[in-house]
Length: 245
Ligand SMILES: [Zn+2]
Ligand SMILES: [Zn+2]
Image (cartoon, rainbow, N blue to C red):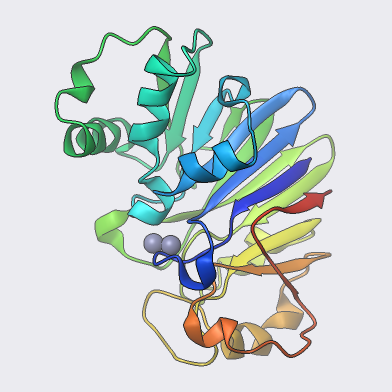
């Protein structure tokens, strides 16, 4: 698997970073994991072939992870002129949330006669799925249920495992999510502030030895986290970072 982190930012574009957007290549397949509001800019800047992406997979329904979907769909309809089928996958409610987001961003957009087939796949911890040739298992995260269910995912393809937390406070579910993974991409919004819905570095460091991923990469860093630039045992994500696993 090759993961390109097109967006490593928080919800606010802190540090000039794009909202979350991960381009996942597994063999000939292409999947986008989260597509935050700024993702069309990120995709265009990186010159990514949108029509080569078969599947969009979402962790939860906050704008910095989900907000790029309406523009992605309209781009597919009117600019990229997509013909290839598109799968939109995510937590329970993904189809309703997609229509709602389209109607909010582009009123009338949900009634488009799409030039390409769209299918929806709901994923839940008890209901894994195979998407773009990748086995996807969901883990329940602790974030904001108004924008959920909020999920982390474990992606397995060709004997490689990539784990991604999405947004979450510390939860014991991070341990099985990360277990034996080739890489864990984990949100680390704050330096040491204890928040109900986001993780801080101090807490992560205290639990570091319980996360058995070969690599740990920090993402979704806010102001206080970015203010610390001292060396850490973990890697820090940046826009354009490539994880060749
Ligand atoms: Zn977020
Ligand atoms: Zn969020």
